[in-house]
Length: 340
Image (tube, rainbow, N blue to C red; front, side, top):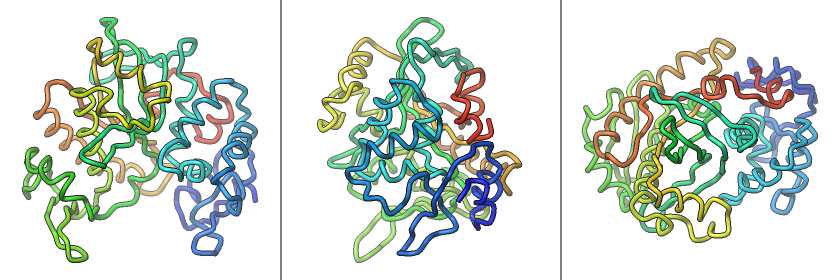
């Protein structure tokens, strides 16, 4: 079926947004519980066994988006190197990993990304994907994107960036959060308090005969999983600042970023942590409202995190891809796809 035919989907991201995309492409329905789903679509037949099909997925994306750059293959390989499911997820049209790859893979010395963050000017000249830092014990934070470059004072910068596409539309509680890994930090940050972040509740609850942490929201319902992820990233990046390589995943030692990030840290690089979302505006029903709701709780969390560290700057406001990429040249078919 054609991309435009997703206009019958029950998912507003497809019905209201992707069906109006200017990209002419063939898509397939995702198989969910043995049946084709009307709520999710892929660029490659979902019956394909993905475990050993990285090359097929890469070839498909290069053809669909007419990408000629030699660097795309290297960045793609990084983007699918996480927990083993990325090669499947990245073919999904609404994948945040796909958005991060397509929109940021070309950041390089020859194609720099210039932007203003928290009132300061930055120029980024390289990007990495799926960078892991240790949270606690066997728990790792998996960062979608890491940009490296310089600030306006010509100082090295490492920007850890969580990427979201439409996830913030999925509101509801986040539970089964490890007591062992997170309770101490949640207490330290003062989050186990009804008034820590307006509209959110951080609680210790019993589930399956064991205690766990839970984040839930009052009305309007919020994207609680995003808050949990940002706290995990804060913990992982903070450990990286203190421990360098010792806080990185040893299984990533051969990756091009492993030594590079530690080298920049040792030289005193400025460290940033932020989150970037895709802004659907009025193209999708309730898009502005959902974005606004998540912006409010992110801002409150950033204030708390920044009050507890002087070595890391958590961006005080949510970024949008539209703002981050202002003036940055994208591949034509990528622009067509995302209506940019």
